[in-house]
Length: 427
Image (cartoon, rainbow, N blue to C red; front, side):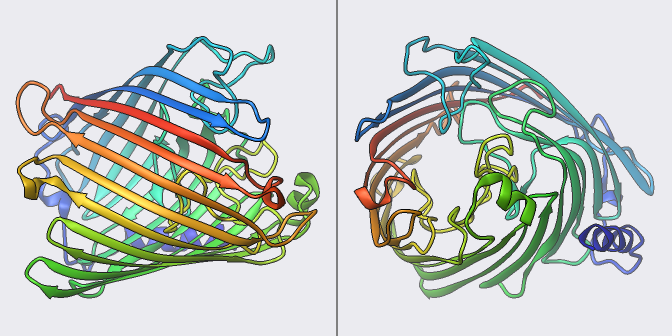
């Protein structure tokens, strides 16, 4: 049914005649609007695991090239997008590789690859302010959001239609039939059969925005997402933002049997209140997971790995997602967060974020009432000018402690991440 709805809505998008915007009319041309960018990324993650679990460590250097063409002029514009990725493993130690960090997939020998390379491309068509793209893509939607938090990004192969015909309204409909794992070569290394996505967002007023999306991962699950975001202006440099996010997930019966899950239903939501004043921001958030599935909120990963579903490693638009996602069965979690923008103190480009999150009421197959807590710190600096303009350095650490009752769901550890990204605009 979702596939039929996508087809009907896509037809409506492409046949729209009464529009408020027409991006295609402003097209300068295929070459004139094109750009080529290269991102050089040096990434390091170290996880010092506790309670007898093996440590993990990955270090790599990546080059990520992306080409985006403009659209040909005329009623229907045509263009192409392409990317090329290369990653080199710098840490050849015994702790490299393994699930979780996933810079380089482990082979049959149990050792991760020394390097990997892959490329992809897509053709796109634009009518008015509606774009149809077919090929290899990196979608960013609440129910299908590719993971770019490791050395190389994930990508998906399929069709996506994005319509912005009405000011403030964005509609999306798509179907993807292959997933390229971030740590492996090939266009179908994630085990995805297909995923259909449908939804949109609307900016009702300058202060209020809402979104509604749904997805159907073949033979795995059906998922719905809702968001409401409201900004209350208080003073010239003060505001209060309320952000609600919620998912409802229903696992397919066949996947429940294959994964060993004990139930098929999960509902998870978060509500965050952020007060911003000058250079400071203060956040209070609550997140709650309910339902009978022992997988909690299932997302991301790869279908070949137990308990994973293949809908993108960033498909968790929730407030309390850091190293831990605080998404276990029955889990309730609270967050206290703080952010600081150093530009007010004469250091533009430097920012700091802190969060303390505590979760309780965790249910596993062997116990109830488990807990976990995480202390998160992050500094980020973006060079503002000169030859290294836009180079960013991100230093992140997490201290995660999990009770014995929750050990089946998660494990304690200390994590450090260092990411250095240097974007270069070729043209």
